[in-house]
Length: 403
Image (cartoon, rainbow, N blue to C red; front, side):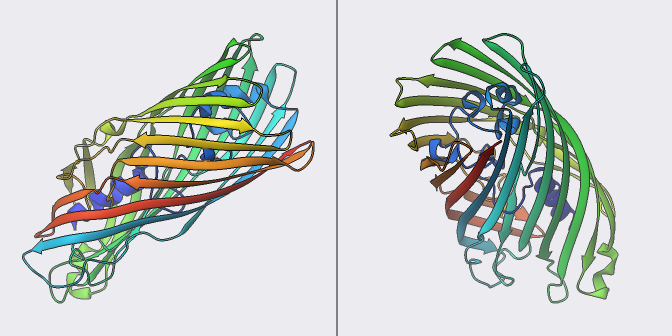
């Protein structure tokens, strides 16, 4: 039970609106549809629409007077476990722990003066959802893990010169989580843990027009600290001593990106990006309340690399392609069935179609090949050993309006 809430704290800190996470460990990089076709390469430098509020607020200085962006993403992760548990307790492998999820985002940018822009975005920077069969062999370690976040990101950008822009933003974030598992006593009653909290952070960005054809973007998103308050409850009054309030202090990691946008010709754009995420914040997790325990997590900082290209076929139609690689922040011995994360290779395609001078649509698809994550998880008196067969499919669409 104590370790269960430690997993809650991890999940809350890594949460997102809807689904298993798909970039930088457990971050949701799906913050627009216009970047998906490039595997989100160069997003801190491309500033192609108001979603730059998330990726680099300085990019707002390249936008028209007023712009609205609304995007949605259908995400289907799969995570199928094969393995054993000791001591043997019966049950299957849990079926596919992933399921369809919908992740939305929206942004609005406004030019106040020729040199000052402001904007606001609503998104979900982190995400997690897994659910196994109720009687699977790992039921004493995890059954359902579902976490949601909503992030409100207000921003301002200032055009210092014709070649340099600066930006900053304030992030207000809400997190909610629910996790369940069974405990190995008296028929295996179900334990449910719920918790939520608010936190705040900031993001900074700079955009440098090195040459007429080349831009470099550098951006930083801060840590967000939470004091999670929630409760645990059980399906059996016999184990009611596990019912009660629980609190955990958790830090959601910071990140930094360096991006390049280069116009090879009037028809071709090249984009590249490297992003660092500070997952080593999850060295351990102290829990207080009905349970009191500090669990060591042993996470590590990781990098994401991406490369993309855009072909402007005509004034109305552009096509995109991209590849990316995400490192995994956790090893087999520290991985848990609640968070069966692994390194991922992205292959993405997409495009943009201009409906009129004021409106356009973006679309994209990506398949993520996940390196089969291994598992050696010890919890609740059981040891779960095995491997996951995992993948992710993402379909996105976006409407952009200029007015």
